[in-house]
Image (cartoon, rainbow, N blue to C red; front, side, top):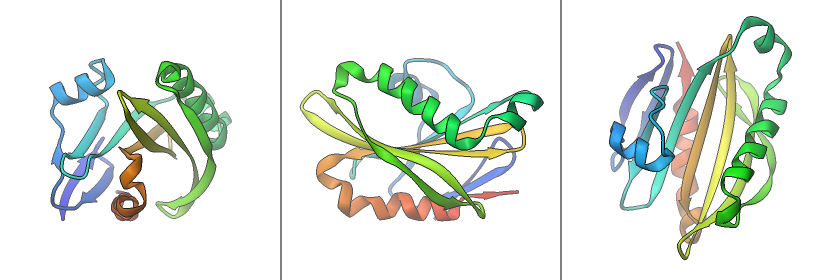
Amino acid sequence: MNNALLHNELSVSFPEGFHVMDRDEMKKLYLDDNPNRWGIWDTERHIIITVFWHQTNGILAALADEKSVAQSTESRLSRGLKKYHYKCLGFFSTPLCGQEVPGFRYEYTLGDVVQVGETILLKQGKTCYTIYYYERKNRSYSDHEVFEEVLRSIAIR
C-alpha cells in the first residue's frame, strides 16, 4: 500500500498499480488548474480516484449539511456532463471517518465508452472534501472493491 496526506489532515492509502497524477494529468482531466486536489490513476484497470478540498466560511459550514452539498454537487455535475449523456443513478450514504456521509452514483459516455462514477462528500470543520471515483462500466462490478478499500483507509489526523 502507498500513503498520502492531503491538505495536512486527510490520510489515504491506495494499492499498488496506481500512480499519483501530476498537475498536467489533473489539468487534462478537469480542464483547469485547481491546486486543491489530488488524484490517483490505475491505467491498467481504468480507475481514477480524486479528492478535492475547499474551505467554507464558518457560517456557511455550520448551515450547509453534507446532504444538501451532495445534491448541489450532483446538479453541477449533471449540467457539466449533459453533452456526455449523464444519468444520475441515485443517492446513498456510506460510512467514512466514523460518520455516515452522502454520495451519489452516475454514468456518462466518453466517446463510445460508458463510464460510471461515484462522488462522496465529507465535511471536516470548515473544509469540505469531495471524493470522485471513475471507472469503465464494463468493469464496475469487479473493480469497485478497490475504491471501497481506499475509502476504508481514509482518516482525519
